[in-house]
Image (cartoon, rainbow, N blue to C red; front, top):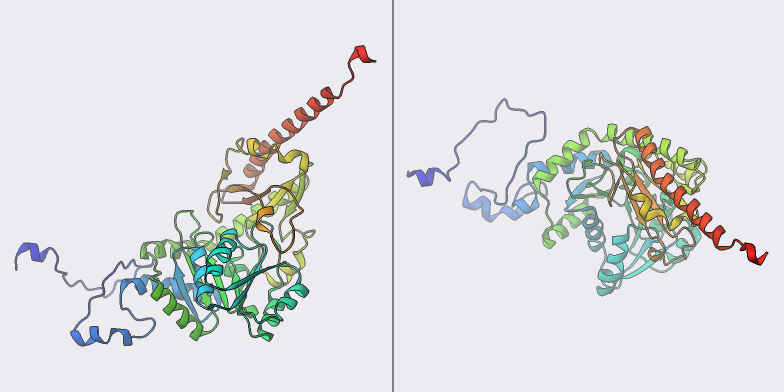
Length: 407
């Protein structure tokens, strides 16, 4: 055998006695078959067997099984992002002529998907008030294939009564899918409350370090899982085993990170409530929040993500004041080790019910920093707002001052 051939020929290495404490990384596009017969019958293999890299390696199987275990489901599928997990879940169960109900507080890109791709496919989408069960029940009088829920709602944090929605939907023969990214299965298990599909944006809490994109789809029914697995395969949806290893590593510290960020967020939320410039703090764990009782009934914990608004006279001063932040970065996403803040215009994202709240909502994701340091950073931000509001008030007073000659 020539050396150039030896370069590409695999040599046998024993793995006997090797049991890694971490998840081994298996990269592959092509799977080698021992003989022609096994290759020709490869599509007869089981759902968890190996056919081609697109359909998973042992690294993928570990992550799928770990998430299935945490969610309390029958099967988990992986997608290249949280958004892909949501859209593939929906596309996998609907067809032309079907009807889908989506909460008005849904993650913005999902609304965009519904208004464009679902419409183009002839699938009717109705956005419903996430807190109005009577209105939702009326919508279910018209045959509906899928009810989507997201609790708490994106940015505005509305809590939905998931068990009640499941009972109503199932009574009418509708499936229920839930975006559970805020809580993670450590704090809420939608499948145990009757949901058929639960989606997680693994890019956030699970990955935990703001350096990957991935999503998961976990189902309560094995057949539904097999059907969705086939859909993802036909669409060519795959994920990198390298990212799977990073998510698996993130799961090891998920409970610790989630508890730390949640505790810091609650401390910061309570501090914000005491600040004169703050109009509202939107956090399910706060007793005065409208969805607090639902959170306390169904959830075992909270996350480090919540929102707040400032009084109207301070709104115009928010953008320049954000530049005064030194620890908290301005950016989308959340669930990482570093804190983030994002100003969001909610009004354009509401259709079921007109938005009458603040022009901008500030969503804060608390990371692994000390809460006191983050409070000091937010105080720096509010200090700039206070200064600008005060200066603006003085300027208005000067404009209205009556000149001495006119007295």
